[in-house]
Length: 484
Image (cartoon, rainbow, N blue to C red; front, top):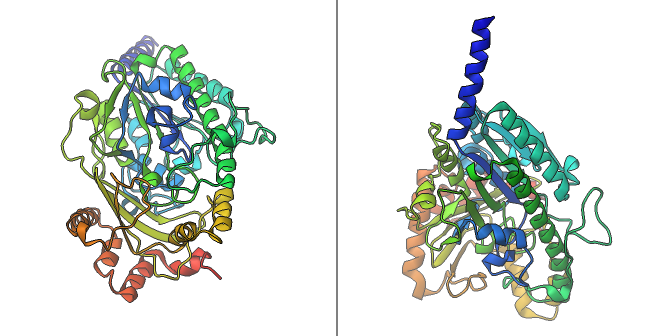
């Protein structure tokens, strides 16, 4: 009996020491947020995101952060596995292979408690990935109730303290994902945002035309974004009240760009660009900005395990950016690689992109002049564009690009960050195009990307179709989205 009691006491003491030695990790994700909506990223009108702007003043702000896939489930699978989609098996709304290591099991084996709020299936790509604490959309006011997030966060943090364990908590807001917040018709359980907006308040992103229908929809998006900010503020309140805030590494990101044409579910600049705010007292200089280094969510897994001093698995595709957090510099971060494979409904629309500080190159093997692209994010914005296109050739050209794409695209991101002018045939950029193509090929070889064979045969449509069929099955029939 005495031996058993001593064992229990030793376990409690060592577990509490263990918790004190290792940081907690809180990853907060927005759902379909345009990076440019945040005040600290130049969003207008000012004041849309007061809690996040205040958090940025205590954080390191990355201005060259991206997600690797601009779709919710495959993006979150990359966070979970630290591998690109074709390296984990999660090439769309599908599971990762069970033999692929994941962040939850890795941290749990090192003594962490793992919790998740919201977006649970999308953030859990493996059956063997079991959270210690889990509440999804229906328990969080349709994922749109800041008070519910506060309460669930407080409970989890208290449980971890009682257990004497550090925590990994992934908090996933369902805002500002569609349906956007219409104050006159709130979804059940959702809360009102702390401020509401009108079409007059909207600054239309440069990749969209400024049309009344676009403004009307973006006003409701802004309502959802304000409620996201409210939720973030309540989660941070719970963390502060817990007393654990000074030993917690907190990161804020989005899972992809805004759910409108030319953003989410694509590979353009504003599709994958993410806000990334990182707060870690005692390790990060508050109010600092990184304008130089590319980081992406494939780097989160190795960063988390290095911060936690945990021996991680082999086979991760990302690199820890802990040196950037502590020293502000790290070599080899001049490029970022992003992609799309299949989207909701299973349609394969493969895209591969590489960007550096000045330029972006995209390869779209599905683009054959006939395939008619669509997604479930078009809404009133695309309807307004379709109406305007009847009398506006420039808008019609934008609609056509969205629907049919081009096999290759190249953009001067310094002069044209909205990716309005495809320069792939401009001989003045031939050397820059070749440089990015070579970088993309090297990346595809290193990660054994099946689209490498398509790229190598990109001038032979028959061979490209054969590669796509071998990779994705009957990819055109799956889509059910070719224009009738």
